[in-house]
Length: 302
Image (cartoon, rainbow, N blue to C red; front, side):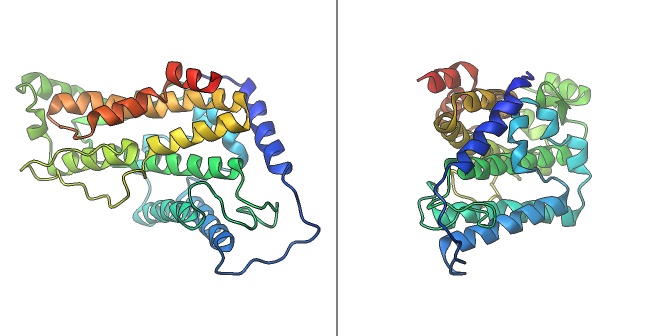
């Protein structure tokens, strides 16, 4: 899983991309209400919120995508966050989405980049947009992992290893209860909080829409657009990475495998056996398939 050579390649690629934009002779402060100024403010607020929550990552940590332990917090750390820190994490997510809202997903607005004090470009660079999508994927994953970890009790849990990342698994007690349940009926053995966490986490991770039933906890509480999920942002990252440098795209694949395949598909494979029905199942699974190793490598190689 680890491929340390990409740590240098990725950082250099990002640095070269940010450094090659045309720079005007002097910097003029943008209008406070301009898209670029609003984006810069949102970025600063998001970074401050992530730091306050204890989950911040530096932009140059992008090179650590091949070394997942340096980016992904353990489930234990996420469950230990207090209410204020959880609020900061949500603020960070909201502010990162505000960046895409004010500049558009392509970043095609005139003006400075996200950090005008460090660099000046006519539009947000591909590297800037990649980093925004990295943070949004990261934040969505953390929200889902925390929710599942907090509610799992003696039924399910999120395991973590430095090589494999996150994995959704039944506990021994949960497996015993599943073995005794009728096919597709295990969903009834879950608590309302557990069903709610699964419904919301599936949407946060993949955009999956769970079919509503008469069981409590089956109506999604997350109020977001359909595309505001980790899988979408992984796909955006991969597309931007291959534009920046082929090696950067290759470095993304391990990260995609862990989030899209091991975690997201891992949750879907299990909970659909428990009785959860996903309305857009085929669409979600196709998106995951396009992100994992074989398909992603084909995309990068062109």
